[in-house]
Each structure stands twice: as C-alpha cells, then as structure tokens.
Image 1 (tube, rainbow, N blue to C red):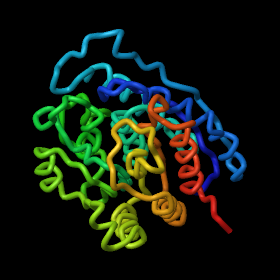
Image 2 (tube, helix red, strand yellow):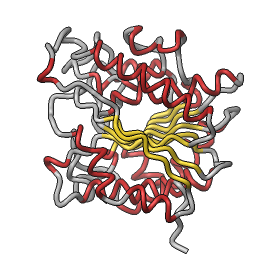
Image 3 (cartoon, helix red, strand yellow):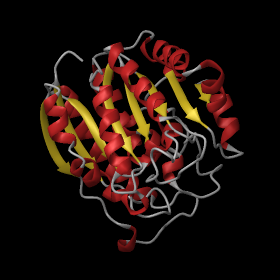
Image 4 (spheres, rainbow, N blue to C red):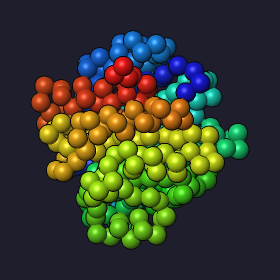
Length: 304
C-alpha cells in the first residue's frame, strides 16, 4: 500500500442470516485492541464508528427468497459511497462485520473508485462457503450467502447494480479460497461463473503457499490491486469458534496467517474486511483476537 493510512468502518449488519449475534463483531474486534495494534504497526488510523443498521425486530422479513433485501441493499448503497470516498481521500478501508452481505457494498465502493480511473480490480474471497447463491438457488433465503454472486453480476439488481453497472469484478481476477460447504444449486453458478475455486482438498494437496500464489496472480493480473474479504469461518472452529456459520475442517492458525502475510507481501491490497464474528458463541473473545492478528498480518506485521 502506498500510504500507511487505514480508515476503520464498522458495519454491524445482522440481517443477512438467521443466527443472531454478528452485529457485535465490530465491537469485539475493537475490544481486542484493533485500533491500537494497527497504529503500533506505523499506520495512521481513523475510526468512523459504526453504520446505523436496522435490526430484524424492527421490520418484516419480506421476500422469503431474499430476506430483508431492501434494507440490506440500502445499507450497502450507503456503504459503497463511504468506501469509494475513503479511497478517493487516500485511505485504505478496513471494514468490520457484521454478516457477509456487507461485502456487496464494500466491493461496489472499491470497484467504483478504480473504475473512475479506468482501472479494474481483483478479488480474493476467503470463506468456508461459496456465497454464490441467488434468490433462485438459495435454500435459506439468507442474503449473506449471495454477496460474491452479486459482485460478479448474479442476482437481483438491488445488489448487482449499485452505481448502475455490473459486474464489479471480473471472474478471471476472482478467487474463492478455503471452501468446504457448497449448496447444491449454487455449484452450477460457481462452475458457470469462471472464478477460480480452491477447496480444502486443494489446500490439503497443494498447500497454502501454492494456492495463494495462484490466487494472488489472478487478482493482480492487469489490475490496480485487489480487495480481500475474510469470513472468519475460513478458519477451523478449533481456532475460530465464534463465527456465524462454523464448518469443521477449515484452515489452521498458521495457514491463515500465511495467507494474510502473502497478501501483505504482494503490496497490492486495496481494501480488507473481516466478517461473521459472533461473540455470542465465542470463547472469551478468541475469534475477534484472532481476527485482529490476521488483520495485522495482512497489513504487514512480520515475525522477524
């Protein structure tokens, strides 16, 4: 990153899934010392606080194939403006979730900023799940299972057409890493999309280094850099128990750090978000503490 300036944006979104509690994720990360520890790396840090996001008790669920879609879309539109402005002003956005549906807004903001400069961006999506559903394929109707699809132009216009264009990123510059649980109908969307998917089998067979080298090569091929979206369920529940949708068999503590360290080494990180931390089911804030460590690795912290 050319300038060591980080702007923290909390998005306590709790509308994209059924399990409550991820709205407390931004606070958990701050309690774990995020701001001070990023400053200790030599960054100037500005914290914008949290977006005002409505809670499910305030409203009706709406369309069951895309629950709370109007409210999520409205928050994402506002978030996209803030992220784009953050980049316009020379800051690196660091977004704290909240459920993963906020990524629809964040990637729109990053994409719009570089589109004005006639540049494209890459995307690295670290997640146990594909998040490539649409209202037509979803088994749950939860929008947190749709944001990567939305970034690639699949799904309702409320999600895909923020700033009036789609897709926000090209499939050839997008990689999904760490996936181990896909819904049956989203698999076709993933295959048809052209993105590169690295399952846990790929990580087992090839190792994190080889996988991240390929993902980074795709994300930086002809781009200004890339956005990274980190769902903490990317990591195994043994090291990150407090997540929205835990899945056994995930990335280890050191594998996760290696992924983030390689992202830092690339020098091409444009924005970062950490999502799906649920303190309600966590153990003494372990997952948020780990999340802070991973942010620090992505921002350049080294062992030596």
